[in-house]
Amino acid sequence: MDEKKKALRELVSRLLEDGISIRIPADGYSMFPTIYPGDAIRISPVDDPGSLTKGEIVAWKREHDLVVHRLISVKFHDDRMVFVTRGDSAMNSDQPIMSELLAGRVTMIEKRGKKLIPDLKPDIPSWRYRLNWFRAKALSLIDTILG
Image 1: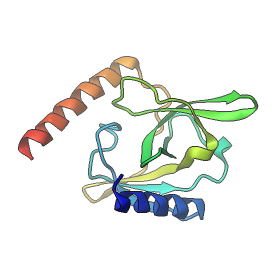
Image 2: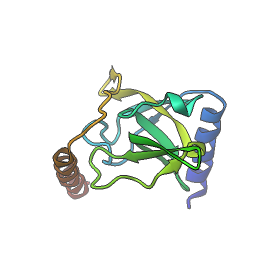
Image 3: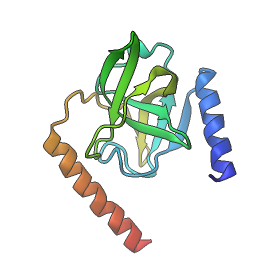
Image 4: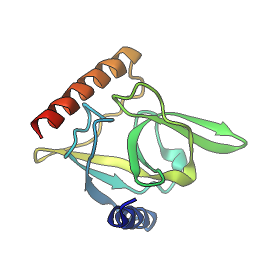
């Protein structure tokens, strides 16, 4: 892993753990069409994971980066909260994560200078995920071709 990327991820995690909101550029198409690559997103700390609502967009820590996906369910396993997320253009849900991996919630999306509060979408139909996946793949291919 690139040392700069690792250091940046650690800094971002530490800022959120210290209660400081961050503004970073989005990368990738997993949250298309809600979030486009290059949109700026504000991630705010989550003091109480129990306050998260199905449909919110959350950030969680993966080994090398942050994943920003929509919360689709909250469950309990051995008396511990377990969160399941999914990108708006992903074909499948992510593996369940424990609250220790939650980094924050997305509280703002900035698109071409317009600041937007993320919509709460608790139930996205499965056909919509497939449509978003197809559209995201097409845009990603176009980006690759055009450079």
